[in-house]
Length: 192
Image (cartoon, rainbow, N blue to C red; front, side):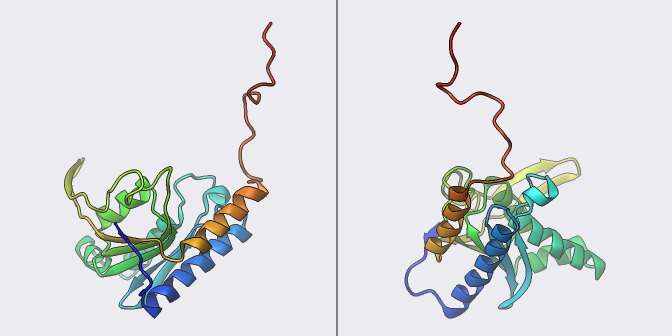
């Protein structure tokens, strides 16, 4: 994974700002504030924000929301699997937080060209923090045969202070949608 330097292009910053707008949208809707945009030929073709709370589905990360919107659109216009794969190979993803292991795997299978992200994901990061799935090229056997996963270029640290500020604000105010603990807080139990 590359770490962004001070010479980021104007368009890269503009796309990250759009991803941050999606993260703010998530925050405004009481979701973990992570957002993304997918870009093809320097044009945003999809966007997403976390929707795990609204959908009650832990897989509805910003990246998966954007990917599913694209897949649905491309299916409607009749693209086949090869055409979809070709389109993804020309796309870049801008996301406010390093893709988790699940999302990094999906991006690798889809063959995304490049990922730019804001802050690192020290607990679940799939692009260098925990695993480096963007570097792995391997064959994964599926029921229908072989699915090739491809590596992708990855650049982290873009506007990370903004992404961290949104996450910090969300967690400092407390997640109103977090499940209530089933166990007593340690130290409040008495032994009999």
